[in-house]
Image (cartoon, rainbow, N blue to C red):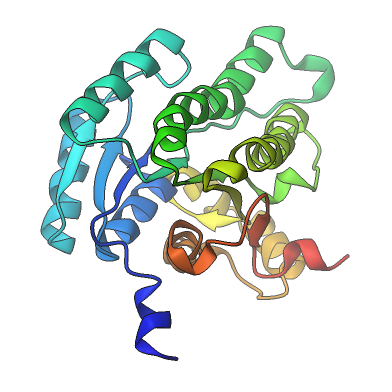
Length: 259
């Protein structure tokens, strides 16, 4: 690989905003972007946790890391927060819509309130963030939007029907963003993890029966580790993926490829 090809993955000088990045997958994604040279804005609902994560990522990467806390489901809060970020740091070059949640229940028992909570957190937030950031990206003529999907963007399981609906929506939101924003030099892609071991899935990892199902259902034979997502994310955020647009990249150990 030539030096020019290798440098295509270098994110030095890029500003990246990762929502929901104070812990879990989001934290690993933010740290990976920082390691690739980007200036990163860590985001979360708990400002104390966000500040702590920002400090740790900065110490571990040597990159500049900032902290921001706002409600990604609130239009006014998104507009105000992005206005502050743009005023102090500039328009983000990279937006990673990672904020999300999971609620499980049989469909017949799933409340309308919980449906709205999932849709707002997993899908509406990505729309609000992408719409707001796109304005500055359009003016500049460049940008990378990466939405975090799931194997549930194309697969379903019992008791998570609303979650699957939101992640399927993420994949189609990405395609719509591609159709509208590609003429302005902006790419939009979905990064879709399989079953990953994080503090949020610790109970499932500890469940021997479920972990055995994951291992049997996944050709790679194991849970994903958050580090497995960093390379694919850096690729989608970099110039190496400048002609990759509207795609869903599954990082799932092969789960979506087999029956």
